[in-house]
Each structure stands twice: as C-alpha cells, then as structure tokens.
Image 1 (cartoon, one colour):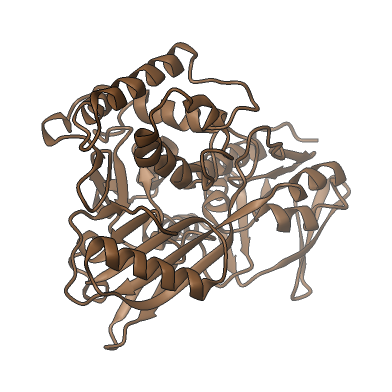
Image 2 (cartoon, one colour):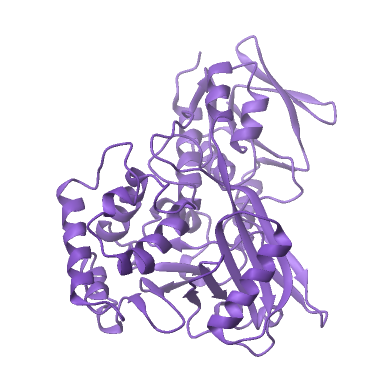
Length: 436
C-alpha cells in the first residue's frame, strides 16, 4: 500500500512512522526545507560570532505527554537525555508561587501536587483550601464541565491570588488564551492527565520537561533518520499543489510539475493550508477547518553574557511575557546559548518590535539582568483558539484521506502531544481502514 503524508511537522512525522509500522510504503512531502513545522531548530549567531542553536519558538512538555515520549523512545531518543525533568513549578523570581518540594518530588500523583499546594509560598491557608476544594470538585465531576464553560467559569471559588499565580499561567501556557476566554473542558482534560495520570518510565505526569537540546533533535531529526533507514521517501522543499481522486486512488501534483498516485493520504498541514487544498475534494470538511481561528505566540531571545536565572524556568508577572527560560542552564555544554534567555509571550498581540522591547524591560525589572535582544520570533498561527464550544475538523476527510494536526478533533489543545496523538491515529487509520 502506498501512503502519502503531506506535511512534515510533528503530526506528519508521527503519521509516517505509524503507517510504516503498519507495512505501508510511505512518501512524506514537506514544503519547507526543514522538518518539524512549528517546533524545529533555528540557528542564530550572537554578536561575538558564536552559533546559537535555538528554536522557532520555546516549547515545554509535561510528563503526561505519553504518546510524544513513547514516540521519541521508539525512534531511539531517550527522553531524559534531551529533556530536563523538573517537579511541577510555577515560581516567580521573588520566590512566590507553587513548586513541588524536594522531599515530595518522588511521590506519586496527585500527592506531589498536593504537597506543592500545601507549601506554596505567599499563599494563605484560605488560598490553599479553596484550590483543594476546587480540585476535589473537578475530580468528583470526572474532570468534565459544560461545553460552554470557560476556565474562569469553573474557577469561581478559587481565590484571586491562586488565579493570578497558578490558574492564569497554566491556562495561557497550555491553551494560549486567558482564563476568561479558554475552554474549561480542554483545560480540565490536561489537568486530569497531569494530576492523576500514570508515570512514564519514572517521569511524574505533572513534571515539567524542558528541552536540553533544540527541538529538531527531540524528534524530527530522529524521525527522518528512522524513515530513511526503512526505505521510505522523505522530500523537503516539496510543495503539494493539488490532490484529486483518480480511479480509487489519490493523485498528488507537486509544484515542480511532477505527480504520483497513492492508495491513502494523510494531510498534516496547518488548518488554513488544509482548508485551501482540500476545498474541492471535501468542501464541508474544508469549511470547518477554515473556521478555526488561531492565536500567536512570540518568543523573545535575549542575551546577557554571564546571566543565570534562579531556575531554568521562571514565571513573570505584570507584562507581556509569562515565562523566562534560561537556555544556558538547560544546555550547559553548548557554548552558544550561555547567557541566552527565552521570554515567552503567549496569546501575543501587537508589533514584534514593541513586544520585544516590553518583554526585555519586564524581564530586566523582575530578574535584575540587563538583556540584549538577539531575535524575536512570532508564530502567528501558533495554536488554534481553544475557546468553549470550538468545532474542530474530524480526522476523516474522505474515503482514503485523513487529516492530522493539533487542530484536528481530539481531547488536547494545540500542543506537541496533541499533534503526535493525531498523527499516530491518522497513520494507523491509513493502513487499517478497509480497501475501497
């Protein structure tokens, strides 16, 4: 069976691996000249000339991302070799906030999170008890809520301090929307997996997994090697122009003028690109995909030669950025990233230059270091708008044609885990569905 995968991001790569394991002959087409999509390597050069391997956006994972961690292992990447596992922590530079204490770091979920709540700095007992009551209420309800509920709506009994120092940072980092606009249903699903999920090879589900290496090293490079070693075709710089049904198969035409026929196709591009390409073969599906709105994420990379943060990841307040990452602390053996900070602005709005200036001023005021801008990357369609009642396009597009991507209907928001889960599912369907 010949299977085409269109799109070489994390969803497309996962689909190609799954279809290969199912015995298909796979051809993967990626329009860009590098694999990885919105989570890939970006190499800069500092003012002193040193190469600085970064990413086209700062990402984090959590221990609950079982499919992503499992795929990495399947491809020969040991997660703890490329990810730094930290106990759940949302601490600010002044030390306030929540963090699993060292003496509870090895506890099973949810007891590690309960220990963090009990010892949160700057919180009164009223703050802690209100959060515990809310968590128990969510658990009794099976971590479900009405489909039109927002995160703010399911947290009415949570104190303002906990909203400011825990719920809002968690919500904007996971769903890329403030709590007043974000889906309570999706937020509770992520919270359930993080608090009550199973450990993965000793990694607690609520653990923060911060990349020690660039994002291409985490999965795309290994996936490309794995596919090529098994005789599969990986084409970069290959833009698919059209897809049309042709006597029970799919004809794919490339921008260069060549074409090929495939028994099955997995379409793993962004929602807008998929909507445009599939409008003629699946108009109803394309309309649903086109209606999905997106929000931006901006990552400001800045440099202070000898700077170190009190932790590899620090929460920020009162400004556009929500988190600062110390890339040098995460990759101490990489000379080019020493002193490099990544300032992440979720749900970003405004001009890039203004965002960069505001984030650097915010970080300097709260972290006490003078930063020089390196580069600012804005991914305008970083995530879909995960609002209540959002209708996402299904995986099934047409007979023999499936969609993959974090925007495809599923339980997770626009995360690496959502992309990988969708890709694995589509790749499996492509080889398991009955021949027409």
